[in-house]
Figure 1 (cartoon, rainbow, N blue to C red):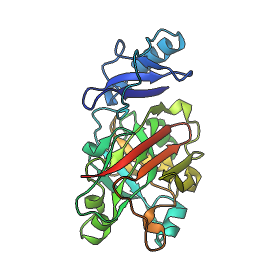
Figure 2: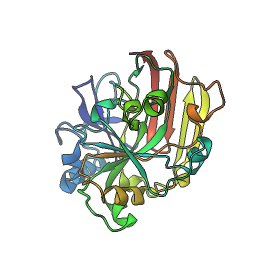
Figure 3: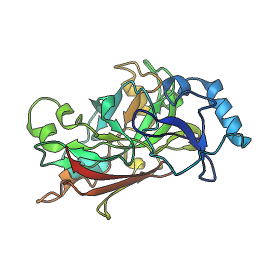
Length: 285
């Protein structure tokens, strides 16, 4: 299933995109799309049955704004340097263990919402990523297979980053990762049954129509199941938590000088196979 949330910021309501590309209203079945729903197999089954029976009402009127596909996100765990080609382009050694950092849930915006370049920024960068949405409580998982079994679904994430803040201003990476609007998510949350192999997905990103990133999750150093297993050794993952699993090669930081960092007015578009497409216009904060 493709689950999404539509409406103005803070007023989104749950919906489903059916096989014909029609938006269907879920407000009669569920209050919202969040961790509580993803952990409830019976509720998800009711949605699936209603969709299969053609019993969900069509969302009337013009296509509304698409918001983030998940409400009440618990935490966003991010994996750095998780693609062989990205490590090569930045001159970094592939890590022996996953690199972990965090983004605050309030960085999340809709897939087509404006992205704000922070005040004083000169190195705002792009990163298309596969986001993993947790559906079952995970702690001390013993295998990558168990990791995959705890995944509710997948989405497109844009891990926008300010490289000067991240690398040159001291401390950890968090200063360059948590600026407002720095995690567009969606358009949909695609349930795991529709993604049989998360290591066979293409990721692409364009800036002003020019293809910048063209990668595949097959290049991940630590695949999805292993990432979930690994993270569960250090923290408990709950339904509604997100893991951003890293970006392939092609970011501005990895390009020759002068590096083409983002500026106000730039248009970024990105997609992951089967998970939909995002489009953002950059503006000054």
